[in-house]
Structure formats: C-alpha cells, structure tokens
Image (cartoon, rainbow, N blue to C red; front, top):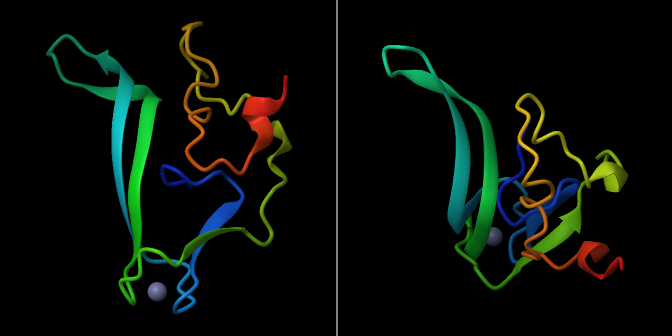
Length: 117
Ligand SMILES: [Zn+2]
C-alpha cells in the first residue's frame, strides 16, 4: 500500500462536509528520481523511486466536491509511525545521497519532524 502525496502514513483524509473517507481528487506536482534497471535492449523496470520534491495542491472530495472541508485525521488501526525516519526507500541500491528526502517536505505540517532539533 502506498500513501498519497501530502498524507503521512497512519493518517487519512476525511471530508468534513459529507464524511467521505476514501475518494479524493489530489492535485500534486512531483519531481521524482527513478532508478531504471535496464537490460541490453534498452527496456527495463524501475527498481527504486525517490520523491525529491512534492507539492500538493487542492484535495477535493469526489462525493460532494468540497475542497475546503477536507481534514487530516489519524487512521484507525494504523501502525505507530515511530519508524518514519528510515522507511526503506533506499533498499537495494547503494545510493547514499537521498535519505529522508521524500517525507520531509513539510507538506502536511502535522508531524514534528522538522522541529526535532
Ligand atoms: Zn465530501
């Protein structure tokens, strides 16, 4: 499972207008680095993907169309996101540069990661 851009793991959106929890239009602009694993024919697969920059635009409810009533609430039964720092993004390849970049963009402001110093 994957978290949409702008939403921290363990959280979910909720439409305060109609109660929708599961259907949203999410606008985002993302700059992504992908590790392409090619074969000699030039085709290949993506082995790793790193979101360098994520900018989230409006989130709109698919049910009632409200854009101002979307709230971020914690998801029931989710794992405690205490291990959020090293979320296995850099697993296979020996790339050392970009750790923690993907989640640290302050897009949702609900996690105290930026003020932890
Ligand atoms: Zn709604």
